Length: 436
Image (tube, rainbow, N blue to C red; front, side, top):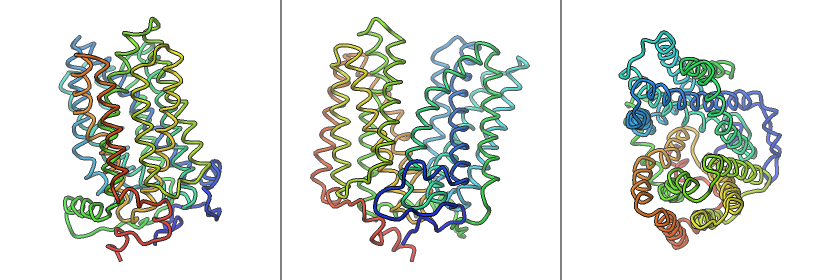
């Protein structure tokens, strides 16, 4: 069995009982606060990087195509190396992986910042830095997610993941605004320096966590064999496999309407323009925070598979409602509701997967969960762009129909219907059995 206090990082006690621990319970854990600060610093650094690199590329080339290709140069290695990053986290512990990835990214950004401030930066150097940043992200974020069960007790997972979701939302609001102000006042080089400092801080905070192997293993096999073993273990765990498949399909059809369709819709439909886009994204963030808090306060439904079906079905309804929202207030209400579904669903699903995974496999399981979003993003966004260019309404209606079809298909799957929120805590999972 997996126990919430099975690693040397955990410094809070389980509250007992079947209900999740209160949201504030994890704040008593010094180890959790260090992890939270590291991930928040890294998220803020990422938004400073996005704004600074985009602006710097435009200054050098004046080409939006160049901006897109630089962003793609970071996205591709992140997606390609994500599973390897999870495997390395399992092999060397999340603490070590986050330390190395944070310091490596910080060094790269410090060099690029120095080149920018001295007006000697060249386009190829921006591309090289983007590739390296994408690669380090593939190692840092799976390790960070798999670290949560190591720093909180088992019944505090919902609270821990909820606060992580809220910090992600806060970073989405604060990061671009802060980066834009720094770029406007002092130039992109200064924003890149903030990125470097945040990344280095995220890595160094890991040194303050207790030492110990945290359950890590150092097998004689090569890392690619670790990736293969992780894929096989997840494949054999039918409920976990089904959950990841549903998440991947949902992400594929939901990313386009939100990231491509929403900006186009607000531009075409509402006179407020960019203000409308900003407020809708803020509404999503508020809803996500509320959903995360609600998930931390209430236990996941015992018939967890039906809960997943409900999340998918509500997401499809939200996408359709977004496409037909006649006024900005209606759209804002829809965004709050969709954000709440996303926040609650992410908190419940992440906690369920963490409980179900064997500690020696959590890095790889979390990397697969992240890959289900990152891996499908390039194709999803390209497809959405093509649909939106022809007929914007088609993007929303086709995506909503595909999501609802996914919900129906999931409801017909015996593996999904049998999923229970108590399985991971009361039964030995196939993944655990494979490591006995």
